[in-house]
Length: 374
Image (cartoon, rainbow, N blue to C red; front, side, top):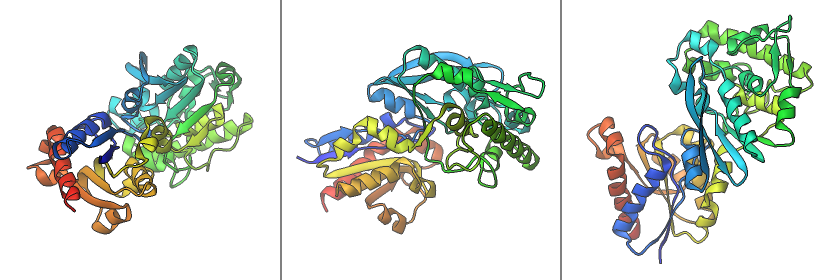
């Protein structure tokens, strides 16, 4: 019996990873009705991670928290096997704001701290924080403040929320947040390697995506430098050039320094929970994909992670994507033996997004049919 493992990421703006896997599975069964199909949707710690974890048996927890500015948002996280998986963007995501200079300076991570506090109140024995897609560049200061830390100016008054406010910070009192955390370990799940500061740092690389102009980037980078200095003065490690500390507008830096968090590969961490590794044992064929397969996909994203695992399992790999921006050599380097871009079979990008499930079923069937007749 042919064993097929389906392990895609989401198609952003169209389908969740779970929905993608379901559509591909239909296409596989259209061609190989007797195949043993293992659907293992995956994520890299970004958007869609919570849905993948819920599909793996987790419990979704929903609660209102303070969003990236002043209004409340309905946020959520997942409890799974004693751990809480908290996606920062569900509290302070860029989708909640209209990017602009004022937003880039004012957006904060207070709501993330509320999610962490709620998870602790429910008895979580481990906290895993995913950090992509935030509107904030506050170095995690808001998150720590929500957990009880004092982030204060020279007069002992709170400096206020947002990355721009960190220019006024004189000291941080971390003991209340650490006491609240107790012995619960924290992990930051990210495949971003950017440091907190400098030309490759949180402000310079991600600030413009959040509306920061050149002057705002300079302001935010200086404010984060001040924040890193204050954290060191509070007895923490220097996170200014730690790989990955710049992820999520520096929220990773706040978690590493303030909460003693470790940094783990987002994809590897999530993949370990989905059963994909055990499913790959004895696989005859592996199918993966994501919305846009491009150069970024080669650096810590789900398709590259699945490709590496398929190679170790000595299983051929098929790839389905909304768009494929890699040339034949790059695909071959991933071990891909067949690929299809939905946009090549649709009259427009909008049509491909709207009809992605049907297109995935059809193109999955076509690729499997070609592979089976090899």
